Length: 392
Image 1 (cartoon, helix red, strand yellow):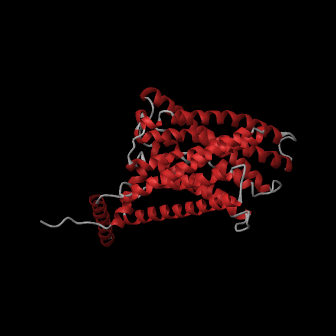
Image 2 (tube, helix red, strand yellow; image 1 turned 90 degrees about the vertical axis):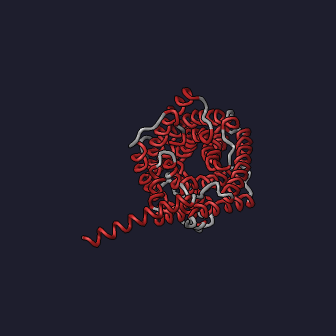
Image 3 (cartoon, helix red, strand yellow; image 1 turned 45 degrees about the horizontal axis):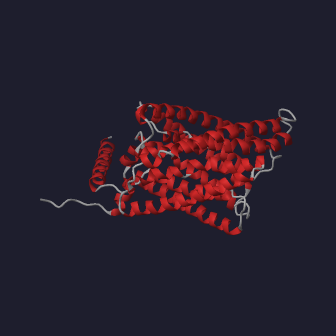
């Protein structure tokens, strides 16, 4: 009897890698985004944020490189992950991970002069194109097959998140631009445009989520993490509206657009809308926290789903600080500080547990037979193609 054929550990890692790796980088980005909003900000804190920024870049490069290698060596597995109705929803997270890098670049590379505002403007358009080219095909793939309401989770809204985040990227880019610059008008309008698309589409997902838990009860197992994704759309939209409205006051006035009072009207309406959306985000957060410990499966092999505890909450946490500035409520600064500390502690716990799960081979690690099966099939496909080409 022949000895069982084995494959290398590296091959098993590459084959077992998935798009669920990107939430780790996004959670890392969530740390420095929330830290950057603290009222009391020391140079030491900026240094800590910069370390997390470079760690995020390293994770992004690791994930993209590994998935590209997987697509080359194991194309069947790569295509399988994209078409999978559950794992496929994580594909757009590569765009969201890129968004956190852009925000970090604006915060830590532009002020010292390492990166010019003109380059940031180019990155904005690259992000918009990246979001559209990723979201639209994935939406076509996902909606091309039926889905059971009984298994619905807010994480399905990841398919639209990159377009929703255009508004957040827009107001960060506007921080580097002169309001009198004609290009600022395009960034402002596009920010509102895509924020509208993203929020209303994700809002429809939230409606389905409420219907789902009405019929089946609170989410259980790994899906319990998805309850925190519901905080993202209202939280990020509230944050975007507040900041875009603030920029609109300066940009519309500088270019004499609409009416002389248009900027103030936009800002006032943005504050009102943001306040209501902020309330919804906080409610959904509490709604996810209360049953969480009793519903989630406490298995290391499901640790990747737990990263949803981090990045979806960045929107409403950052919005807390901005509302403190708008209404001059010092208590909101304290809430923001507490939530930022909890974000950092959550990241630390999740990062350690993820490393342990990785070390034990519980995540990003395929079985020998799965790797060999895809290797044989890919070799057969190449041989068939070569034979057909020779015949022609």
